[in-house]
Image (cartoon, rainbow, N blue to C red):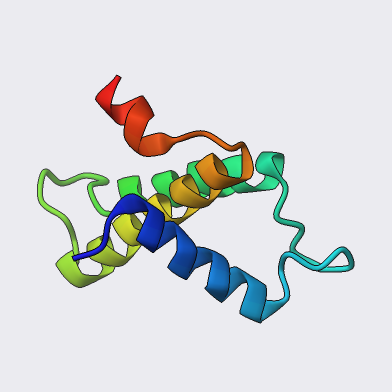
Length: 89
């Protein structure tokens, strides 16, 4: 099992490997852009429950949950927020 810091490190390695932290990236990883990405992924999560109390596809739903979590962890890291402490608070 990984803690929040370890997961964040994995996410940051992935983003770095993709070149998205580079100054000339076509996908600038700014707090604003990542906050928007959280909202977009949360909306995709809601699609799984549109017109139904049960998710349309549990595997796809798990992927959307992971996307929301990934962006949330990245946003907290970019803003130097200790998300684990914020949750505990």
